[in-house]
Structures are given as C-alpha cells and as structure tokens.
Image (cartoon, rainbow, N blue to C red; front, side):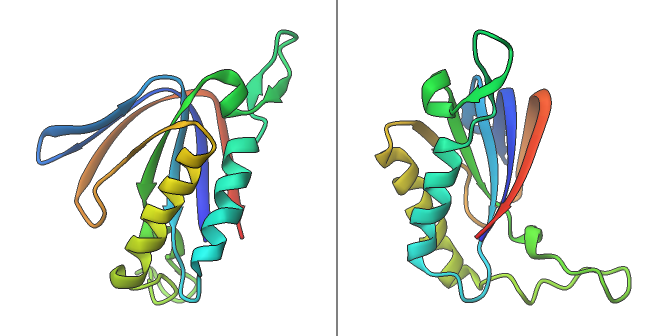
Length: 145
C-alpha cells in the first residue's frame, strides 16, 4: 500500500458538483492499494497514519499526531499512486490492485482508522473526484508498507 499524507487546514471533496466529504484541520490521505496488498496491511498503514507526528506542539515542533492534535482524516482512494512511467510518457497502472480487490482494502483502512477514535471521511471509490485542499506547512509524507 502507498499513501501520500498531507497536513491540511481544510479539504473538500466533490463528485458531479456535489459535496461528498469535508474536513477542517487534519490529514488528507491519498491511498493506493497495490497488487498483492492484503487486509493485514490496512492495520499497518492505519496505525502509522494515526501515530505520525506531523502536527506542532506548544514549542512549534512537529511532535503531535492527528489524534493528539484533534484533527480529522479525509481518506481518498488513489490508484494512480501505482503509476509507473519508467518506460515512455504514459503511466502504466499494472501494479495497482483491481477495483474488486482494492475497494475492500480501502474501506477496511477507513474502518481501522476510525477504530483509533479519529473522525474519518472518505471519497467515492472509483469516482471522478474533485478535491480542494488548503495545505498546512506544506507537510507531505509518502509512506509505503
């Protein structure tokens, strides 16, 4: 699994012009599920995301997790994180899991995150989503498990 984790002040997600999800301060997490990824990896990545210390403490140091900072998470499915452009200019997505396997792992990851007590919103798997994001920092972390 691959995740691009961004600290945000606000993120909104729309589909067909309709607001689907919105968070205030927290994390926008773009999640890609690869071929061979298992439900067990949902545990690993959820634990990493909720414990990642990317929020500032009272001394201005990145020392707090999204839980400690009282933030929310917007989890967005993103198969293009498995885009391979090493040959030519058109990315190949053969390393991304097919939707029938990726969607259950994506939804399980959302549930695992919620299990830690953080508010989690999701996008619409497979939809043409429009995302507006007000980044904080910016702070962007790439994680793969």
